[in-house]
Length: 429
Image (cartoon, rainbow, N blue to C red):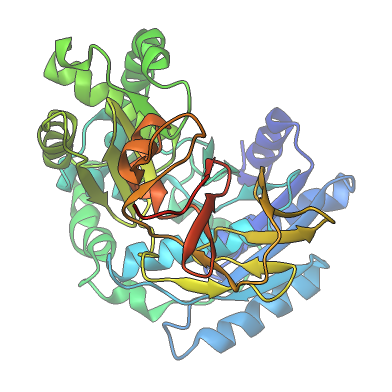
């Protein structure tokens, strides 16, 4: 079966009709775009768009944009151009990939599937990179033709074809494509494999890529089986995606513990920790002293433990020194906490934040919003004044969330933690 016929058959299996095509302008994505364009001629019910990510890494990046614009204009396919800024902290390759998918997330529509031009050679390279990192079944598992990443459905219809097959098709169709000069730079790990190592293996073993694909698929299926066998236990621990209950966790074997944690990370589509990182997480966070509130940094995210539960959170900004004056009927809170609204009635001020609201007496004092307080308060009319730390504990509020809840002050006196408690007297006796 030729390339186009195979492509057409695969699209029949997806039943989807709306596709966003990732277009770099290189050989692989150019072939993918033209296959979609050819399909559109005989099946006009498909709705296609393309997106090109301008990373700004090459002096030729602007000319690549022009090439993609010309290509899409030729086939009358709408094109999105998105310039991105790369975070280099985890390396240029990882940073470019993260920026690329974040940009695509902003544009993809709910009914669209992202189509990428991954092919069989990419599969081999990815397998070897995972092998180099010492990955287990999860990392060695095959790239699938259909999967989900960052909440987006992804379709890879060229995965069973080699790059050589794509190049033959492109030359037969008289296609033109751009060449990224960075592909020759073997300082990058993928390029080193592609240019220095894998050609020798393919020369020795002609069907090497297909053998690697089978091995990767075996790893994927074994991981799926493990997940299936552990599913009931996993659901006992994880009823909310970003929380993992630790009851009975110490009774499991070490392999079972790490397998359950990997399922948790996979569910949240977060960076998969290495074996060493998982061991550190288990020893230093899960089995830390009961009174501790340990945490573990993983990329831009943090795993935290509180009251026999793990939480996945962002690396929040420190808001303890923030003090905002409320001079209008609403105020924008820092660090993506949303807005706090103020409504005046004849008897009260009503403060609203997220799904919470609180009624407070009217005042002529300055109204301030803070995120930090220490000392004793009276939060219930029939109870004595108590340390605010104890109140937070009774309410089950994790320590890192306590400094992210807006505290309303009239002058220097705390009035309320919105959604959690009101203060009934302000005497410092």
